[in-house]
Amino acid sequence: MLDSGSSHTFVSLALSSKLTRQTSLLVPLHVKIVDGQILACADTFLQFEWEVQGCSFCTDAKVLPLAHYDMVVGMDWLAQYSPMQVDW
Image (cartoon, rainbow, N blue to C red; front, side):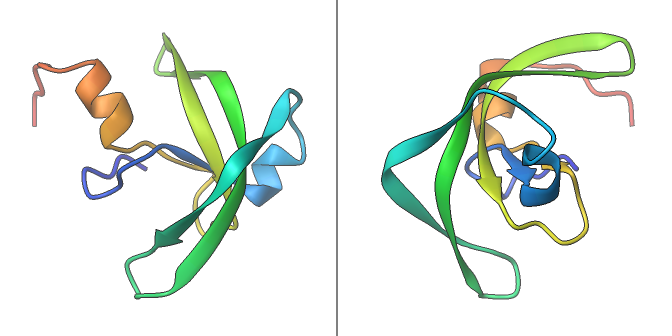
């Protein structure tokens, strides 16, 4: 999911269990999600490589217990690739 309201890019706990090179954050991050709940984030993937529609990207991705998505792409990624042209 692409979320301009998300400050960071996140991968789900379920997806992270299938991946390698996960590291711990020196200072855990507390993330407020859309329903107001606060989730703790203690792990990250540095330079996480992912692909969508034939395009490859490399982004830091923090780990959260996401219920409905494998990945949330946030403003950190959007800012890195800005400006961009979107054909709605």
